[in-house]
Every structure is written in structure tokens, then in C-alpha cells.
Image (cartoon, rainbow, N blue to C red):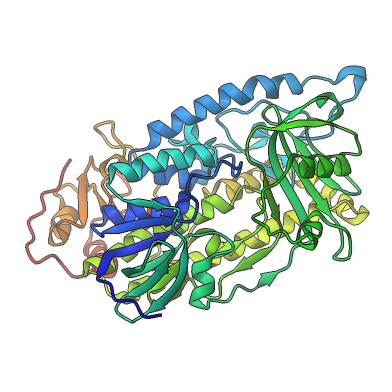
Length: 549
């Protein structure tokens, strides 16, 4: 491809879903010029993720969006709560619903102690050890977890608009060429010359394909549907998760929400096999008849659906991870870098984690204060978590199958999840509260997302970082750490506080603790200086930053 065009922006982000919007915002906060291009002319209306995890909620918190997310959760609970309480009752005729079983017995309406589920087994909030060090360190965002993807996109769209980032809809990527000093991008709206190109364009990523990046993994063996429908005879369905030899389904937790999962071997007449046999594509809209047929098959009932209230989605347990998250000046994030089944609610959150990790690093390279090699840490830090999520979802598929062996395994897992330790373990994994990346240093906070750190003035440490950049907490009596950080003015904001432990914490823009210390000795000062050089580049030419307290 030959394109004669000036460089329009530093970075072009392909895809205006949550991952692309978060990435664009982080880049803009770092000072980069950025644009978003999106294939769809309007935001997608299809139902997708129904909640976010702790790191995602904290990413919103770090940018001053916590109050807006909390409002979304309040509205969701108002919609879901009455239905969940109603369907918790005994069914007419004494038939107890078989779904949404808490391993500890019974069911509860959703509350702020959000737990999630493992393979359809809803985790009992009363069994969780909420005093666990990982869980108790991340409670400030408890009221902002039940944020569905559609509402999250609306919230992020407003954030991006306030930052002045253009979002060009109805524009599709058709070609790309990495020239070494930029990327020439062919689009349906004309050529674009950009410094960097990031594909946040989903599991069937055009950017990944055009960049020639492999996508190895495991093939699908199930097809699922998620839809919000009107049901003529909802009493025919069990509330929550229910299994059969043909698959599984869930009704709830809000009126009309249904999920179906169909298992079979490769030779069977699966929904996705029928789809391809009639010449369709995975992007073909899901029809009411398709959802009803699937629901009838797995429920063993003649339930009748009368309308789709929102665009339905079709998905599989296809599990793949990009061979590389970067190829020259082309990078991948979100589903473009990894795909898997939606069980456990990890996909959206994994993608947002990619975006906040990549955003500040690519912004630093664009600004010139970080070498190109900093981008290598993006793949190194995010790939292990992506691989874990793929296996976490694969394990749930193994437990959910309708065969006798999986049913027996499900009973074993249910027993484990009926214990305090088992439930706490699963909730920590699902919530992301115990996520950690391997960084230099032996302090227990290093590599973890910064916990809730309350300051003497009543604020929290993250309240001082809404504009992006690094945060340095200094609790030394004489401001030793803050004085050292003055040499990195404009990149590091120092926050002084009363003397207690930890005495110092350096937080990267993605919320990861890069350095921490409980002492004020020369070893602590030396290790902080090393961390500042490693993560924030060379000192600023004109030091003079005044710490705030």
C-alpha cells in the first residue's frame, strides 16, 4: 500500500468499545494526540458483560469516575433486586428452582458484596472471609462493581468527549503498512498516517490479521446465547442456572435475561454449525427464533419468546491468545489479543487492564521520555494474566458439560466452594483483588494494584491522581522521598502524609505499585531512585516540583 499523507495523530486506536475508549483516554492524559476509529456507525446495543471487577472499578476511580459508576450500580440494583427477591421464593407446586444454587445452599438477592459465580455456581457472600488481606485492601469501589458493559461504554464515551478525543464511526480499516517511523492505514474514509496503531477491534480483529500476528489456541465445543427477551410463559423456566444433557441455561438475574449454553461434539448440528452452513457469519444478527430454539433445546420445555428487547449476542468457548501483543508499531489490546468464553466475567476486565497498562507506556514513548523498549513490558506483564484467564474459563467449561463425568466433577467443585477457604479463593480470583505482576523489589505491595490508602486529611491517595501520571506517597518526617522526586517534575505527583507505614509508595499510572518501603534509610532512598529511573525515565531538565499535602 502506498499512501501519501502527513501524520494525523500520534496514535490511532481501532475500536470504540470500553477497551479502546479507556486506552484513548489514558493516551490523551499522557499528552499524546489520539483518535478512535470504529467500524460500527452507532454504539452496539447487544447485551454483553454485566459487571466489572475490582481493578476495572479502580481504574475508573483513579480518573474521577467512581461516583458515576456508583450511580450506575444503584440503578442496576433497583432493576434487578425486586426480580431476584421474587424468584428466590419457592416455585408453585413445591418445585424449587435448580439454578443459581449457592454452594452453601439457598440464594440471595444481589448486594454490594459482589461475588460472581464459577461455572454457574453462585458464590455465597456469607461464606467469604471479607477480612482477607487482599479483599479488605480494596473496598472503596464496592459500590461500583455492577456496571454493565453498555452503561460502562456510555460513561467512558463521556470521559473521552471531555478530553476532546475524536471518535470517527462508520470507518473500517482495510490495509496497513508499518514504515518503521509510523503506520500507513487504509480505511474506508481514506488514508491515515499515524505514529502508532492499536487494535482494540475484538476477537476477529482486522488489525491483528493485517499485521500478520498469529492467534493460536483451542477450538470451540459449545455455542452460547445471551439475550434480553419478553417471555410468554416464564414459569416454565427455573430461575438461575440449570443443567441438562443438552447443555445449560440461566434465567435472571433481571426479568427477561436468558443465557443458553449448548454442548455437543464437532459432528453435531450445533447452532454455529447451522449458521455457517447457511452462509452466515458470526456477525450475523441473532434472531428471536434462534434464541427460542436454543432455550427450548437446553431447557426441555416449549417456552415461548415473544420479542427481543435488545440485540442478542452469540458466543463460543473459542480460547486463543495472540502470538505477540506487539509487532513493530502495531499493538493489540482486549479481545484482539485474547478471546475466551464469558464464564467468570473476565473478558471485559482483562481488556481494560490491557488498556491502562499500555496507555501510559505508549504515551511515555510518544512523549519521548521513555525508550521504545518500555513497550516490551506490556506483553511481558499482561500475557501471563491473559493465559491464566483462558485456563480459568476452560476449567469452567469442563465443569459445566452435561455428561455424567462433568456432573460428578461439578459436585466435587461445589463441595469445595461450600467452604470458607474455597469461596474466598474463588472470589479473590474473580474479583481480581489478588492480581499481581512480577516486578523488582521484595516489599509485598510491589506488583500489586495499590490498595485503599486513606490520608490524614480524609482523602485517598488515588484522589490525587485523576489527571494521570505517577503518584508518590511520602510519609517520611522530613519529606525525603518527595524531595528526591522533584527531579521528575511533571511526571510524578508527590503526596505527603502523617508518619506511618508504609512510609513510601510509588504508584504507576495504571495503579500498579512500582516501589514501596516501610523504612526511611539510605537503602529505601536508593531503591526509590532506581525505581524512578526505571519507570519514569531520566530526570526532568528543570526540577522544581513542589509536593502537595
